[in-house]
Image 1 (tube, rainbow, N blue to C red):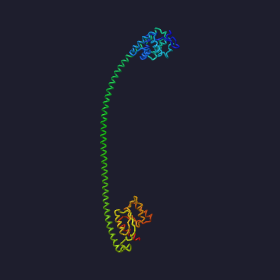
Image 2 (tube, one colour):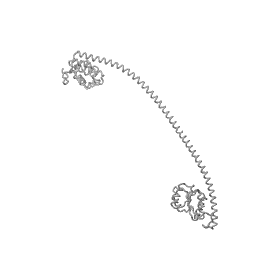
Image 3 (cartoon, one colour):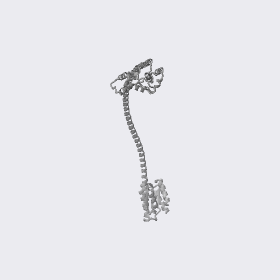
Image 4 (cartoon, rainbow, N blue to C red):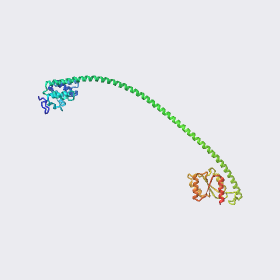
Length: 378
């Protein structure tokens, strides 16, 4: 039999149409998928679009009974799919080959070994019968497994439907819970906003209360300062009245002196301590600033010239130095001057070799005594 040649194994492979028909049908049904079987028919231009899977299988099973273009094509496809890596088994005897089929039953290599046995030219009727029994029993076991699996599948389907129904119910419950939680969250956010607004109002009220308390404290402090200023003003006014009275007395003395000396600048009596001020420039630094007019009246009534500096040193150092340079008499009351002003007067007097009269206060009588000291020194 040389219906088919397989390389080095010439004449050892029996074609599918010469194999035992039940075994050949089994190979077609189990070794070819539905798409493989349809593709076989399409390659031979056989329309399969309206054919069922069983129609396709039945057409192939009928075709492999004889040698024809379709059976040759089926044989070529099965050979290409099952023959590789199994050719060594063909060299074994029939007993070894049957043992290999038994061992492979239910495994992935069973179809390859069944292909070798079904296409073996010298396969005995006994072996064919045994192989057919193995195939049929495997099919029956498979049917049992299929039916059992089908029942399990039905149970699984029912369980899946139940679980799907439970899942839908859970989803609906979850949606309701989410809606409720969103509503609660919205209410909480509204409450938080209200509480933040209340807290802001409370903070404003608290800040306003602190500000009012601070203003009240500041007002009390200002009121105290005002009272102190009023007391100081009263004291200064009293001093001013005293100084004015003293100035009037000195002016009266000066008027008497002028009458006695006939308007001359020398030869006065001892009661006039200021006649030697004629043409002398007197610099008074500091003192009571409001008394500058009285100081000026006193100096000018004694024939002198007053140069007054308020003792404030912001930008007044140069002006002070110019006044000190041209002064004949320099008077600096220490109780009405800053420490900086007194120190500046002393340094400038030392620089320009001038005498400074540092007075304990700025009263008219004290200033007048300086005039007397100058007269006595002269």
